[in-house]
Image (tube, rainbow, N blue to C red; front, side, top):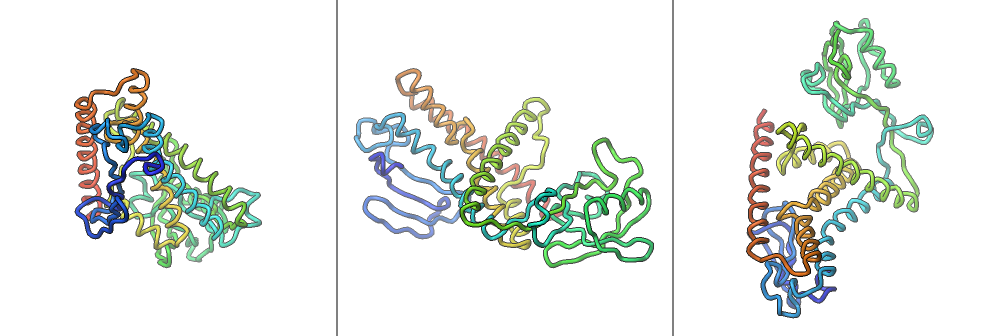
Length: 336
């Protein structure tokens, strides 16, 4: 978008410096950098200087600059659409409705939520674990439905039960005792279950599904960030567990172990999260830069370079502090 607008692009980088490798084509250097937490496009005049130079960022119209800033967000969404379209073509594991069961393959009863401080959490049950079966009166029974598992748990409140759990290729026996008196809105074990199955779509429907999946991911991610921000202001904490690069790397490994389509889904989720996070109107993020452009358009003159630079520096510093805090928590959880 920058080149299309006639701006001089000095560097297009994958990752952040220090630089590992680069080549120059024309006036632009294309680089591979060591820190793999994103990427950047370095454009002449982005810092507010060289307003009089025809090919600088700041010399262009507000509309052209807004398109350049928004391009990264749009590419994150486009990547998610591509990944989810391929995943729908290859076959996605989804929660099944009654209408879906007849066309689904490889159905499973899976855990889709584990409540904190519950018997399930204490026993080590995890999201996406498959309940293969359970032991009743000394006999091993195969799981057929969500209702069967729920009825078994309900009938054995206060007594230790044995569940046969599969995660990837690993199968293990888990002993756990359902609570007699669980907290409100929680079950005896503290898990939510769903019947899942693999559904494949023809290529033309897979593309539509990819767009639809990305839309719902974006909407729910925006709602999630809104909830986090509200909790921070009202309660002083996020109200949810946050993960940084270390936590994401761990979850990526778990997703890859479950299968390639899970990995595509998780990568799409990260991409949508980056898009929504980046468009929040906070200094140092693309949303903050778009906010400054909107203010400039209303005032009909640019914001003072010193004011914008200070706001972006403060915003960047706060983001780095948040990253350090979240990463330290990730490392502690990793050793736990």
